[in-house]
Amino acid sequence: LRSPCSSLQLRLERKLNRASSKEWETSTVSRRIAYSTFRSTTGVPVHLWEPKGRRAERCVVIVSMPLRLPTSMQMACWNNLAEAVVGDFACKVFLVTSGAHFLPSGGLHLRDFLEDLLVLIDSLPWKEPFVLVDNTMGAATSILWPLR
Image (cartoon, rainbow, N blue to C red; front, side, top):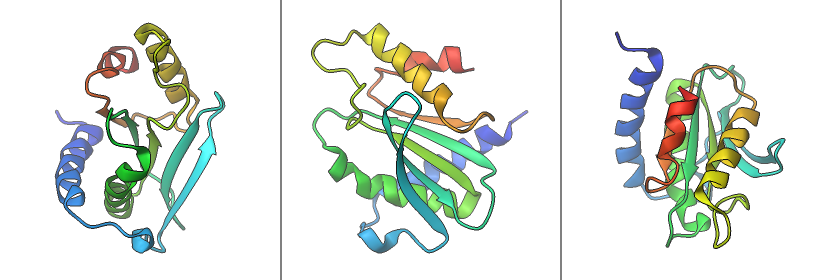
């Protein structure tokens, strides 16, 4: 049996492929989608896209840590993806990216990073099942087991 989340994940992959090829402008977030940033209870900045005027039925959490691409250059893709997902599926999309101070730099061990990431995800204002998009080149893949 497929859960609503696995069905959403397949549709999300299709949307991501289309969204990544679309050009981005700051005005692409439509009037039916709200964008904001906030600090989680752990103090880490998080980007949030959510539907305006209706309740979010699902949640997508994106953890992104590309090494050679700054957050400002990634936002075009994330914005297009979030616009498609929020608009079509009434989801909240949380993005934690390499601009967040808790992500590993020279001195942070991977184990500490993963523990901090789990605490951060647990602190998000969403407790239902969610889809996790791991764009960390494998660094955070091991959190899938504790999140199951």
